[in-house]
Image (cartoon, rainbow, N blue to C red; front, side):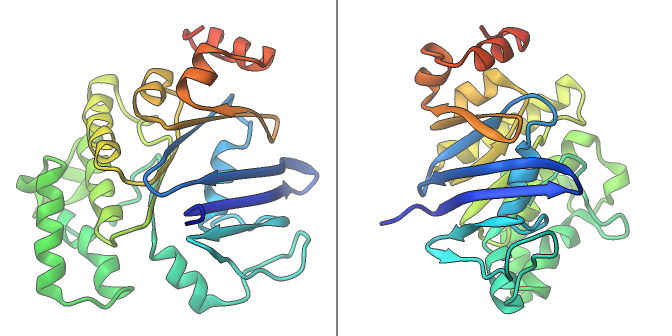
Length: 255
């Protein structure tokens, strides 16, 4: 069986700024891969290239053996098969820094929206799954509340439940706790750790080195748009080869 995620020689520029300079990365089913690195190293851009929120100028992205169809290379490159893109996006659950919940919908409606509209699944089946997921992340009691009535930690847990309700093959987390106070951060990290323990495939952009150490099968250190170092937790944190990574970990308090 091949990798569930294969990124091959991905380059991405914004105008004259080259953010990704040829990144190649694989993840197998059940892997938790943490992307670490300084601000501006390309972590979030790489994550957004997986579901084509950002389209790479060159290189390829494949999900479960299926390469996303893109036009010829360059700044105007775009997906060419919108049915395929819709299908692939329905297999990728994305959790953003800023929750991105619909403010006019209840928490339950937020979680049900994509399975109903995109996957066209039966309402009662989706409702039952959504309530199970809200219970799982510890906010079933908030199902009928609106996002503004929840704390940041509760909103982020709702966003995780929403991403899970499409039954994704891969979960993508872009700094899921960066907007939260430390005590709320703990609630969200506990949920992500629970998902990791269940064997879910996850790609996680994080600034929390302790958490990356706790949940990851693979750590990928990006520096100036390239993978500077990658390996297991023990290899990257315990047997660091790169001076740049050593400096980064030292600055992060995890030398």
